[in-house]
Length: 182
Image (cartoon, rainbow, N blue to C red; front, side, top):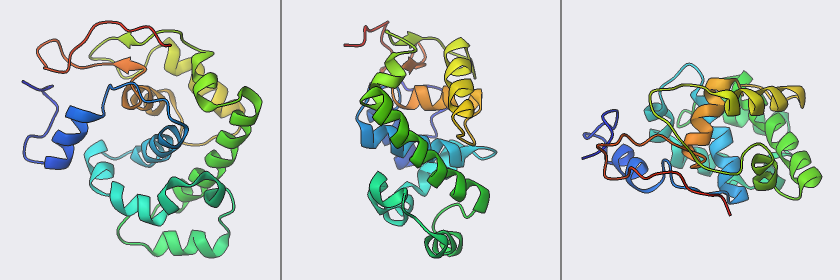
């Protein structure tokens, strides 16, 4: 049995639920990819973003941070014309800005993983929430640093996506209890 929100008619959603969501993955490239994708979710469903994920990977040079931070107006216009992705100009500009700040955080902390670990030392298990103190604190810090589309609800979803918050329902085969972060 899977979490009740998982659309069983969408193979991409099933695969994401079964193999990614709630699985601890603090790889830098993955952390950036999910931050960008989650910021595009604002006002939309995750399923909508997930269905466009491969197109985002192509459009965003496989989430290569060194390429993204150097995107210029020509690239922004190209992204705005790309019908395969979400073409919200504010979100596109924010994704580039956020990648630059992500890189600054990596320089400051040594990695984005270490930055996230400065807020929590364990995986949190909770269900039926859209924010918590952890997402509030990270959101506030990222906003102070100048990131956009990183409200507490988006950051909560981000933390679920990268496995720092495990929200698999107890009836789900992916449910597991608290884990320590190494």
